[in-house]
Amino acid sequence: MALQEALSLNKLKHRNILGIILLALLVRIDNVKRYIICIATLDTFISLMPSMQLCVVLEYCSEGDLSHYVTKMASGAVPGGLQVRLDLIAQLARGLEYLHSVARMIHRDLKPVNVLIQKGPIAKISDFGLSKALSDSSKAYTRTGTPYFMYYFDRTRSLYCDSHI
Image 1 (cartoon, helix red, strand yellow):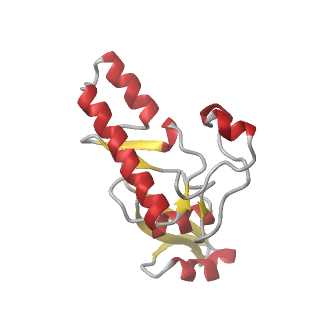
Image 2 (spheres, rainbow, N blue to C red):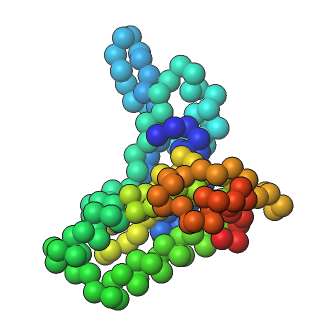
């Protein structure tokens, strides 16, 4: 996980956003690798990063990604009626509403493998490596993401998203 992604993810606190459980630094003391657990802000990590390695422990999602979960639903390995599918869609919508309205951030690479599933099922949006924070007046003009999962309009126009989408 890149530092930018850890910074973005650490700020997000929502049931449908993958959360950070623990942050640690890997350092060498007397030629032995040791983990130093730190509860401080990520600003502390940034100042120490040139000489240390950031380790991030994320929430566990035992059901895998959404793509895998849909395949399991189709095969009957897990319950997957219409209500379960609608509930997963509603959870993703709530997570995206939080990202856009509260966190003022766009994901820019939302696709089935970037949605992890916990038992329940509970959908968790993950992989914030391409995410972008928005100011009140900013819009994203750079086309990015996985082309196969981009809305057709996105692939043909340069302005592809603002905080209302």
